[in-house]
Image: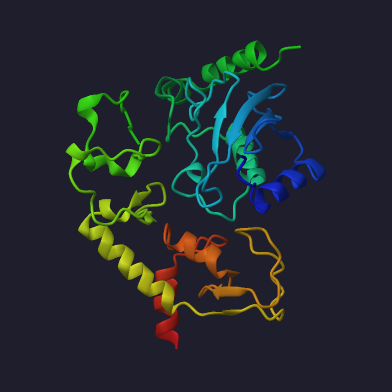
Length: 152
Length: 145
C-alpha cells in the first residue's frame, strides 16, 4: 500500500512541469513520486557553462519540515561538492526553511555553480586548488565539464 | 546519524533499543521479563532541526528547552482565518487558507496554519518566510507594547 502523497508535493511537481525554471528540469521518478531526476544547465560565464549536470533529489518523509536530500550524479570539479556529489549548501542543512521549495533549492544549487565558495569547502583538495591557483582550478573545472557533462 | 548497526544477532537483543524494534515486535519472549510500562509510541521531538528523538531519549537540557518552547508557542497569537488577510496560501502546506482554518500569527505578521507552523517551531524558532527568530521578535513586541 502506498502512503498518500502530501498535497504540497503534488502541487510542487505540477508547478515544476507547468512553469519550469530556465536551465532546470526536474522530473519525478515513475516508481517513486518523492524521487526526482534533475538536470541543471551550467550557468553561463561559469566554468560549467555548456554542461548539463545530473542530480538526484529526494523528499524525505518529513519534508517540508526537513530539507530535500540532493546529490550530483555527474562528476563536477567544485570546492563545495565532493567526490560523492554531496553538496555543501546551508539551506540544505541548518538554514532550511519550509518556505523553501524544490524550485528554490535547485536555483540555489545553480547559483552555487556560478559562485564557488572555497572558504567553506567540502572537497578540500579542490578548495585548496581554488585558493592557491584559481585560474588553474577554473581550467580543471572546464575540462571536467567537457569530459563528464557534455556527453552527446 | 552514524547508525552503524550490524545485522542483529542473538546477543544484540536489548530492551535499551526498543525505539527501533520495528518488525519483530510480535513475540515478547518470557526471558525478557515484563514489558516496559509505556509501550505506546513515544512522541518524537526535534531538539535541533536535524535530529529526531523519542521523548525518552532527550537530555534534561533538551527537555527543558522543549518545555519552554511549548510554553512560548502558546503565547503566540492564534485564531481562525476570516478571509481579511490576503495571504492566499500557507507556504508550509501550500494549501489555500479557507475561512475557518485555525491559524497562527507570528510577531513578524506572517501567518500559517496553526498545525503547520507549530510543527516547524518545535524544530526551529524562526519564521519560515523571513527567517526572523521568533523569540527575539517576541521580546521586542513585549517591550514596545
